[in-house]
Image 1 (cartoon, one colour):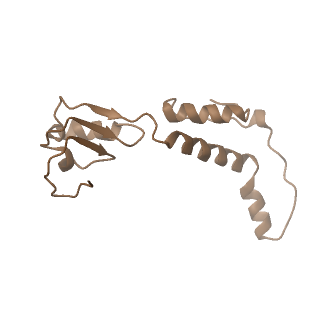
Image 2 (cartoon, helix red, strand yellow):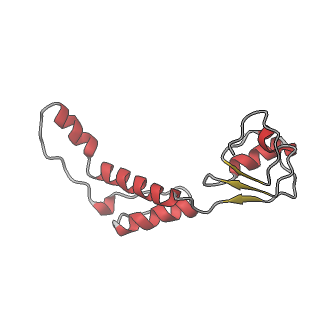
Image 3 (cartoon, helix red, strand yellow):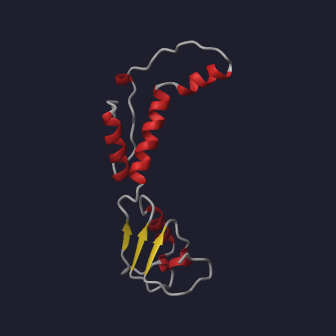
Length: 135
């Protein structure tokens, strides 16, 4: 069931993403499953509100709930967007002006990936197939 503020019915498990303190506080949960890419926001909230979750309740981070593939697709689309200068050509199109632009060279188009966790690793794997230099 979906939780609403004031809902005090019992539950064995909670599937959450940025849960409010009152959602978890005082419950007799067997486990909490974070639906986001990480649990940092929950851990930060726990530091400020230790009553939010009993120390004995395990907190699980789901490895990949389909976000990896979505992130791969988004990253590749954005890299190709900038590499092929779509914005520059859109400006020309809007002004009814057409002039070939210098191409970027793949070896000079280094991509920085922040984080080498589950999602960052999948993004790196996708971009490697396009032979972009990665950092």
